Length: 210
Length: 210
DNA sequence: CTGTCAATTGACACAGTGTCAAGCAAATGA
DNA sequence: TCATTTGCTTGACACTGTGTCAATTGACAG
Picture 1 (cartoon, rainbow over the protein chains, first blue to last red):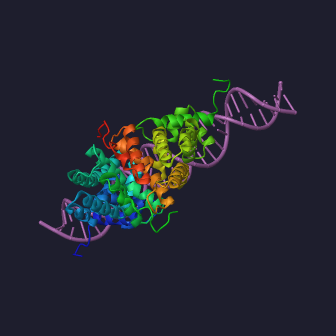
Picture 2 (cartoon, each protein chain N blue to C red):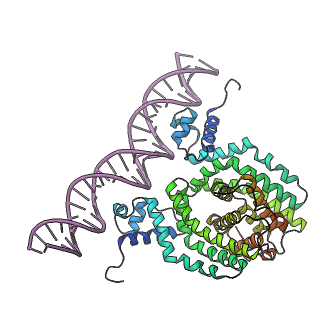
Picture 3 (tube, rainbow over the protein chains, first blue to last red):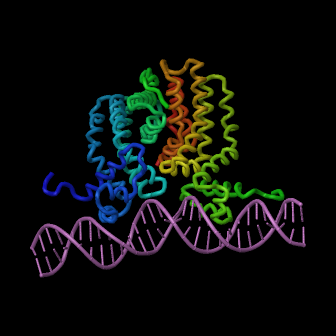
């Protein structure tokens, strides 16, 4: 809103996110992005050396925009392990829809582009930190199943909370967001906090799938 | 071995699978496949109209080769629901590594190619049938958590058993196949058959991740 | 006035998919 | 035996998309 509203790199990132966030849209090309930004295709390359770099930058930009750390903060304040697990699953689960468009694009290139795969893995490692913290809290409470290896428990929670699983349940099976949260939360609580009660009525959401 | 060893389409499928099954290999191009088959690139198009068609045919061919139905047969004979779930999880979980190479290729194009996505979904729907049957058997035993919607329970089991989850745990987290099977089995039993005992010692596999 | 910076236009190389046409060689059949 | 069909070959080409390069323009600053 100052004299220079926004600089070009930011404009590009903004346009990229807009394109990416359109549901069911085809993955945008560099030309699409340039057009949406209102600049030439070559100008995009002036700021981002490759499509992968741009996508990676877009994820970072998006995290700033959405203040992911703020969203995940409540889970760090929970006292008991179960509470912490619960808060983390809810916070992350509700964050996924916001990043899904970008995640989709990055995951698509991940299969062919090693650099993109590395960037995505790094981003997911951050989320893994939250999983590890929740597992740690559960361990301190002594609610983990006996003999549990914390590394493995973290892996499991991390996998359970993957964007792919969210995609499967909400996008393919047609679950509502609430249903997704309730179910995954119940599953995490049952598996990692031995709380079978968490499963009651969880698989009986009002909405019905495809 | 006989007079006419193998016809060309079969040779192409065979070469495709060989390329696809190489761990960590780049996804093969039509040229790669032609070269591996020992024919010209155009000859491949003579038998398969597009790369997607070829990949889809390769999955079918592979299913025949591996006799997936035979592998899944034991689970259909189990008496109790829990037994059936157990047998199905084990059978499918042990089948995934065999198809992973091809699955990887198909999933990679799934993000951009709608036809491939449809083909892959169809294939996964077959597996979903097994999930549904297991859920059905559990329902007859009355072991499902109260109020469970069977459709949703099927979705959940189906998601839990996805190739992506297998990939996450064994390829990225470095779990052994045995550990994967034990853990997923435990999770499925705990969630769908309310058998918390199934989780004991499950997250304490000998091997350690990355 | 002169740099310098940001962006533009237009051309190009390259990889990969998919199409087309002409030709060749071996098996099939009258 | 000659003609036809079948399966494959070679080589060219169109198209999309990424990434590079060079020459040019316009604005702003010292």
